[in-house]
Image (tube, rainbow, N blue to C red):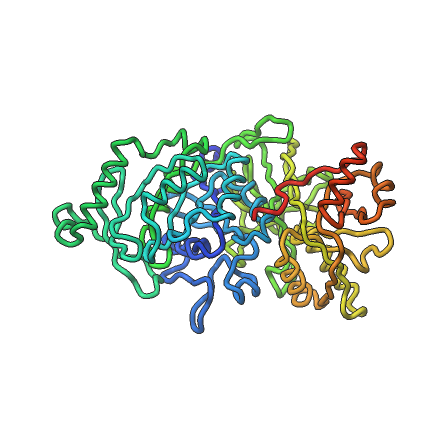
Length: 530
């Protein structure tokens, strides 16, 4: 729809991420959103594909399907109630915190998924802190209500006391965890009863039940839930859009992603409450209006999505203006022009050519090889986005190719992983590309890196441990003095950043104390999001 008004098109967009602690049901919920949005036909996939069943759309990587966990983020677009929904599924595991952080930078809001039995878990708390830091409002979905768990009032207290944010229920459950009957809509008091479907693969049948019928059919479960729901309304625990956008309150939904109970309520809530894309904060503190000339932010780079072509995709969040395929854009970091002829819209691993896109949409620019994570792309009016800081690595392994005849492929593969941010690749002046040190937030990143080098580049590597346990950013002036010390080395990332690696935190603290003149800067989120 070339030539449309960017403001009007932005108003139709909802761009949101789904975040959670591992195993809270995030990827299952993603799949059910697609089901209710009509993007999967009549049957949803599952996180772990059984024989004869399809795998989850967002978990496209082989290792994800083998392990049953989300390792990399995914972008999916579908329509719902006249809105264009741009859904960003994120890795739940702490080892992939950097990927989650970058995805949140591209989102306007988040859905935080909690396990009804476990409540707030460590990763949940860290993810919430990132949302608050980035001023990203979030809705809360209390999942797995079809299984035994904590009571609803207990969970509300836990959210309020742990996150210091006011929970405002949008729906209220009838029936205890493990005996889920239905939901009360807090906006009008109506009661919706659910029926199970085979494996939760189709939309759950819903039945509107009167108070009299509810009393007959659900007895004390109905009366108890109704009393709690009325009490919450009387004390003002109702959704307030202003406090939600200020991250002072979180609208709360109850349900079960596995059985599809409550999914429609949550998807309606995303549509009604998540803000449409607005003016985007720039590095100089000003904001770029949605109707300014086209601009976008690269928040992810991924190779290996198409095994037949081995291409490289830059994921771009459109921030302003209208994108037209074939337009010549500029990469802000280099000032170079590049073609957008091969622009695509993404649906997990699947993709198709897209001709136009508007603020909030996610583009895949194929083989735009100069683009890096955090880059601005634009036409006409230059822009620069606030930087996406790297996480402090805690695990360091030296890598070398097992078969020296595969060194060319090994070097290419390591370079690709570095560009994606899958691991941080550190080089020293002596070994260069032959034996780089891979630095990671968590050990599972090494497993993914090795898997991809073997399967995508045909160059399996051997990893050996190093003596290093902690890193700090430094500069060229401090490098000679640090390299002269025992228990310290200084390596360089591809972007020119110098990292000082220490054998122990104790030794690093000694150096900081004895040599305050040296530059040793903390990196964001030391220890990742775990």
